[in-house]
Length: 339
Image (cartoon, rainbow, N blue to C red; front, side, top):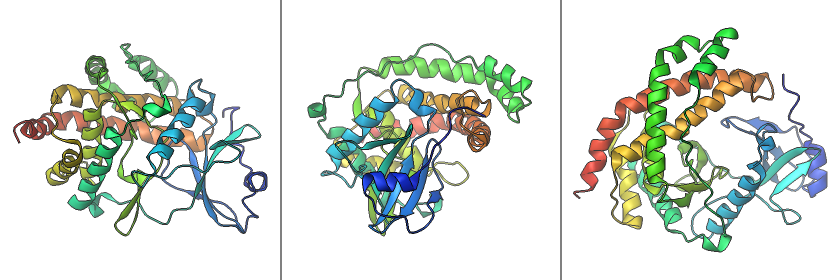
């Protein structure tokens, strides 16, 4: 187990920020893969508390990324139903005994399951995404420091470590090792070519990050906000919202989101195969992080290690499905060029 552990002190936090007295035990919320979310009820109200992963906060860029992401969501709050963290003493990031937190007013709402999503939902999300992409963020002074990494991940090294630790995913990783290098190369090549066209966006606008109160959506979890190629962001978001329970893509929902996007943004054109190949990049990055968690390379406790192990298997299968659907997705997107 890592020496870097969560240090959760909700009672002390409430006292420090004058949130009121706790009236019951904080309840951990499910769904987050990076950090831990809790619902707390105090004598002053109900809050959602995000306890930031202490391993992630060790990264040199982590603090600045959180500061910038909260600047982005606060800037957008007048344009779209975005939900920023609360600010105390001039900061949205709260530190208490080496543990960092984000505090949010509680939102009544539920995220949609794949079988609950319809074309109307998709069009709405497409419109919001276009609004984000069209927003001028220059007043925030956020510098585009994104750069593509043309080095291949050493998947064989992870495979070897997995064998040494008798990991459950060893055979699956072995079966896909050549393809991982192939997908990695394609992703690097496309990222290099798309890097000249970037906008600031949410970058993770999937169904779990939208809460719905009846038909009213609220966009949450902005921690990944930053620069991204707009067509990559649009296609990835369309995939998120059109993916069925079994992993297949519903064409009508996919095109509905893009229709909502283009109605606000305007017509779209791109080298769609390059855009879709770029979609491997984030998935491969998540796979590597999951491998590190599973192998205790970057992991706080057994709960995270177990999650990492589960995510390795799920992510490899998801990347394979994505690779299999690229040609069909490209056909749908190419038709947009002629509409």
